[in-house]
Amino acid sequence: MTQKLTFCVYCGSGHGHDEAYTAAAWQLGRAMAEADIGLVYGGGAIGLMGTVARSVLDHGGHVTGIIPDFLQAKERLIADAQETIIVPDMHTRKKLMFDKADAFIALPGGIGTLEELVEQLTWAQLGRHTKPILMADIKNFWKPLLVLLEHMREAGFIRPGLEVRYLVAEKIEDTVPMLLKALSRAGEPALSDGELLDRF
Image (cartoon, rainbow, N blue to C red; front, side):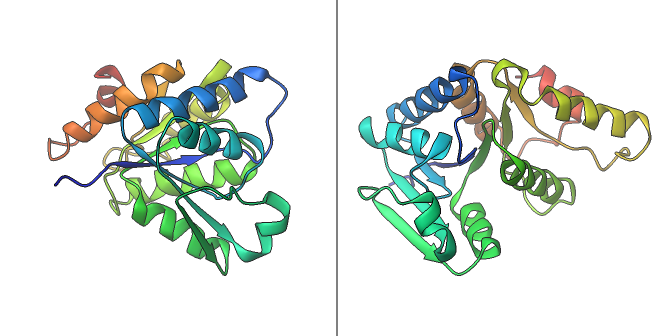
C-alpha cells in the first residue's frame, strides 16, 4: 500500500485584511482533501491555520497539528484533528513538521510564516532535502520576497551552484497539481531556478 502524501502548510495565525487569503486557505484545504493529501500544520484553530485545517477536515481529509505547549492557550486546538502533537518548543515543532511532510506550501502569513519558509529554502539550497517548496502568491503577497531573491542573485549572493529552488502558484487551484508534478519528477536531474519555474 502506498503511503499517503502529506503537505506541510505554513500560514498566518491571523486572517489578514483581504478576504482572498481566507478563501484561498479554504480552497487549498478542500483541494488537498479531495486529492487524499494529508495536512501537517502548526496546530492552531485560529487565522489561516485554522481555516486550512478546518477545510481539510470538513472535506474528509486527515490533519496532523503540531503545536508547542506554550501556544496551546493562545492559538487553541482543533479538537477533531486526527492527530495533535504537543511539543516543548518551536525547534521540535518545525523538525516534526519537516519530517512528516512530502512538500511545503507557504500561504500568506507573518514573520513566523516567513521564517519557516526561508528555513526550508535554506535547507534545500544547502542540499539537506529535495522536497518541493511552493509559495502561494495570493494577490502578489510573496512578490516582495521574490523581488528580494532576484536582487540577491543579481548582487552575487545567490551564486551558481547555490540556487534557491521553489515554485510559485499565482492561483490557489494550481498549488496541488504543481506539487504533484514536482513530486513525480523526483530523481530527475536538478534544475536551475529559471528552469524550475519555466517547467511548471
